[in-house]
Image 1 (cartoon, rainbow, N blue to C red):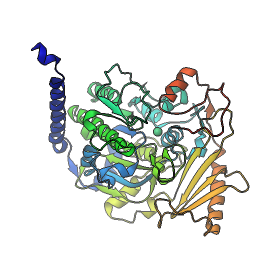
Image 2 (cartoon, protein in one colour; image 1 turned 90 degrees about the vertical axis):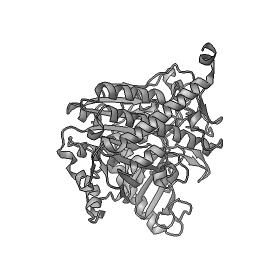
Image 3 (cartoon, helix red, strand yellow; image 1 turned 180 degrees about the vertical axis):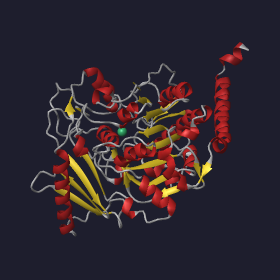
Length: 481
Ligand SMILES: [Zn+2]
């Protein structure tokens, strides 16, 4: 017996059994636990007074790596199954390729120029009214579980949360793997966040709550051995990590079912940015704003199953997510959001009406190219999309800024810059962007905060090359976010 207990095979065997059990429990629970309804029922959600929100943010998730977005590998079997009875937005854009700027837009429902969070020391101001504050006021228990230091309380992201935690782990990490080139300095894995979420659902699932769960293992290219399905190359390891993330999400869904909360919870899957695999000469993110780093998934899993997936193909934006969610649960809106509620758009698609009048007409994204360089001047890169054109502008304040122009209808991957061929359209969009920026930045509220060495080291552990204030910035240092 002693020898058996010492054998690793016993533990692998138990883990495999547990995995099979979890999945089989999950599949059995899928249909019985929630009713199936027609899509016209979505418009009635705001009339309910019992709805919860579970907002799952998978850091660094590009849309085209999910099966439901057309990927040929089976990276996300659980999410793909759930999506079949849910709302899927096909064309979604984030507002930066760097976490902090992007998350500030997501939570405020505002374009980056309006909140002003562009650099490593910038924080959301106290006077920003965030969705968690609105829901807390409305009586929700609010909990945030995150593993990315850029959304820490010191940067203003904890506003309105009763509990806002970054879980610690003492787990033996031998079963977890990562790419040799990826940073591995984060404590624990996403399983710690999952376990904290499951514990919360077990203890609070009977009440009214909003949970924000921010996963990070995909950003770290980290996965458990059982998810090593797709190989060992850089991009393969990303897929392994996504499969592992999908397994984490399944545990949260199972917990909701087991707590009897699934038929009164909206579960949202979103991301802050994508990841580049050399489409435009770089790997990673927070280096430019091309499609591969701003095209993200968005899935709304409803408190009931739809007979079939409701696909929204109009382009939408991350700033629209919280105006939509607040609308869906009948809460007060964000007072100064640039984003709009997508509920009328969803309803139009559900009813077979023309969705165009209800869809957003433009999108903006921003990245300060020197965000991590202490003592260096900002170097803003801004994109503005007015279908079918998208312009990239470096230093829009300069008299003669560098621009790139793409025709997304003919070239969705942004491979052919047409700014020389269509100078008039480029000039027109440059002017529109400048006007928008000057209007938006009038009310920018971001503040500068001191970051101590401990926090800087935690952020460096994510792979961010942030200089200390004591170092002289080096112009050609490559950032590795
Ligand atoms: Zn991120």
